Image 1: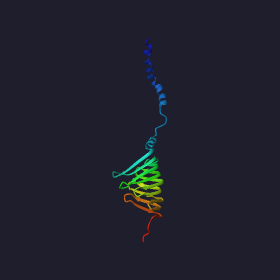
Image 2: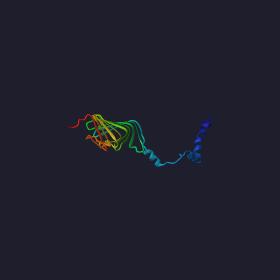
Image 3: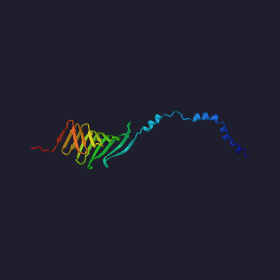
Image 4: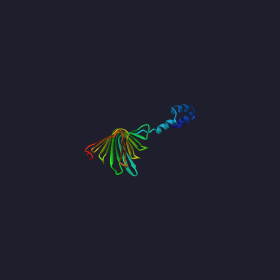
Amino acid sequence: MKPHRNTIWLIPLFFIITFPLWSAPVGKFLKPRGSFDPEMKKSLEEKREFNLNRVKITQNQNGRQTALIRADKAKTGANPDILFMDNVNADIYDEEGDVTNIVARKGEYNTVTKRLILTTDVVIHKIKDDQTLYTDLLHYDNDARTVFCPGPTKLVARDTVINSGNLFYDIPTERYELSNRVHCTLSNFDEPK
């Protein structure tokens, strides 16, 4: 009545005894295909690409906020330290905390050097002095606290319009340098007598 139960132990015994016969073909079948390339693993680990939506970057210097950079989209490219941004809206704070707002369609932010490069329809509005600057290329250096526009610029203030070939602005000293064919138009100006 119980002979079936006594013979069931023969199945594992059969696999153990015949192991040398079937282990080679089964092992070959289960072996992973291809080879391991350590260089491939390194390249996958080193490659960091990000696509971000609604990015906000805060810059601080000596314990106080110097800039707040916002963008609709940002992504990295071949260099992971550079963020390529779309629809950039940045606020730059001077020594007294007054805000200068900068808007541009495209931008690049280097996370190592903390430099911001804005391109395409750049508009800078210095709220305190009610000044607006128009350009197509702007370089902002957070460590040096400077703004440089190497291309044509148009500065509009109350009763004043200044066109120039380039512009340099030092934020701590509030000093402008305009060069390359500067043209200034003053309104409501009385000639000296």
